[in-house]
Length: 279
Ligand SMILES: [Zn+2]
Image 1 (cartoon, rainbow, N blue to C red):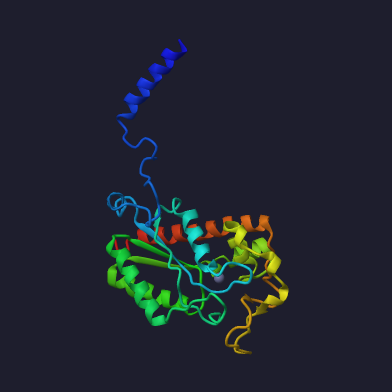
Image 2: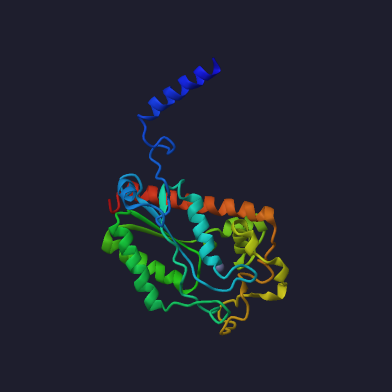
């Protein structure tokens, strides 16, 4: 009796599933959100009909205290993956090399010239626009001159290709979240960046190699300037921003930063749509 019931169920399920060819995939959801993994036929079915937004993580290779040299790449990449479904976007391959400034003398650091970076990123923005994305979200994990270049490219390429481009510097954007979680300001490879990276690759964070002397507060205004900068941990404010290596804070910070970034994107895209800009 049991066997015949099972047989009947198999027949019914088979008949039903014959009507829905990709039963495992939720309706309207691509098999992957990663541009590295998606196939061209599926890309054509989704972009731009169902997906208008792309996330482009940008960073660089530079020292980060006891974090990996690629922290500026790992953070925006993980952030993109965490929010891609929520904001209905694809994630473009990360730009792992960038314009490293005062820390390029440290072992394992790389610096791309501003001129080369500008042309390279410009061509990528052009390619994303030609691939019919309407909203290009640059999630930048690295500060310094790279920020200014990305902003100027956004202005230029948005106008030329009639696309909407948003540049987000997550470390600055999440300043409030840093204060909420740590009760103070952050820093380069400080409490904030350490927590975020610890949440994604805890095995690559080395508190056993850390000492407070590794950190230097950034100079206020033009009080002093050192080339190269003497530390790989730079504090935004004196006496604040030292890494905590606290697992609970890391998880909380990861969640709060992702929410903050997703909220900003949702807000800006909704306002672009409402205003009918470059539709
Ligand atoms: Zn960094």
